[in-house]
Structures are given as structure tokens and as C-alpha cells.
Length: 120
Image (cartoon, rainbow, N blue to C red; front, side):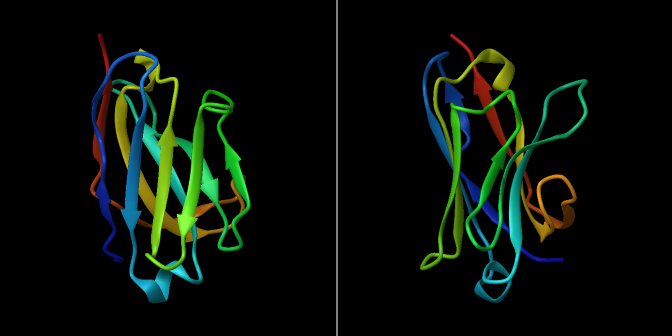
């Protein structure tokens, strides 16, 4: 199990922004693909954004144009910038490390999860 350290969740108003961060061990960060998942109450966990070790990205249709996944190789950190937030974005967000494209992604380890609540 790889330790992933997440931060940045919290409360935002509709239309607002939040940025999530996820730090991974350097030895893993350099070789792994990574992704953010979310799970809302009563709903299945879904893949929100994916980034390959080379930096190629992919997104769920529900967040395209609003969310941006990026990585800082010097800090071994992946970010999820969330803009134009909607109440339906409310969920626990999980950082993951794994392997494969967004359509064939295999999760190796999960972060502890961070709550994002969008409400006025």
C-alpha cells in the first residue's frame, strides 16, 4: 500500500473553486499513472480525472471544462483544480495511483479521501 497524502477539500459556494492536492512517494510518482475519483452519498464511485506519467489527461464528461488535473514532478504532487463548482460536485474525493489509460485504469492504492461540499 502506497501512502498518499491528500489536502485541499472543504466548503465552496456554487460557482466557486477549490484545489485538491495529493502527494505520493517519489519512487512511485515517477512511474505511476494517477487519477482522482469521487463518491457522493448513495452513488457509485466514479473516475473524475486521470493523468498519465507522461502528463496526458482525461476527464469525466461531467467535469470537462471545469476541472483540471496536473502534476508537479518536483513536488511529487498531483493537483485537481475545480472551478465553476456545482452542488452535484459534492462528494468525497480520492486520489489514486495505478496503471493504465483512463479507460483501462487499475488502481494500486487509494488516498484517505477528502470531503468537498458545494453549497450556498
